[in-house]
Length: 197
Image (tube, rainbow, N blue to C red; front, side, top):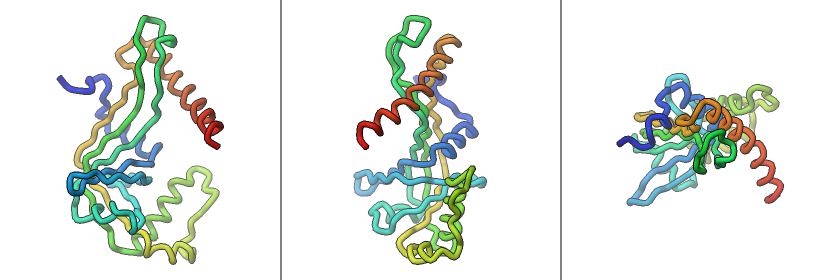
């Protein structure tokens, strides 16, 4: 039996790319001596199907983001608890979520000029659509920090989309779960930030 069930998997590459572009902060997992090294970094999806990222040279995982090493990358879309109270039919509690799991290979990009251009392009992507800040090519702070940053390129070998969104329910309940995902995510962010800040 396949797990998760087929109705909770989405093999549409375009849907997974949308998750990556909308939620670019990825969890990057490498393994060294049977121990996982985990870093959270924004990754940018390029039109050639590769992911581009940057890492501090002092991060121990930086040494593993080269030489065609294997890598697991996770992207997280929205998620929330689903109470049976939202359904029009009798159900049990569950958790809905969107995740993308990628098995990859990674190599370092040594060119400092490519690194600089990549940082500028990443900033441009993340500043969209308003572009209130532009990282200029001649920014002296950018130039002085390039020596502390390494660029890497990820080739995706296997895609897995996990879209658990109550697809096995009646249409009305699917829509109720969708609205709950929207409502809960908007409210939970505010409640959490009010509590910790």
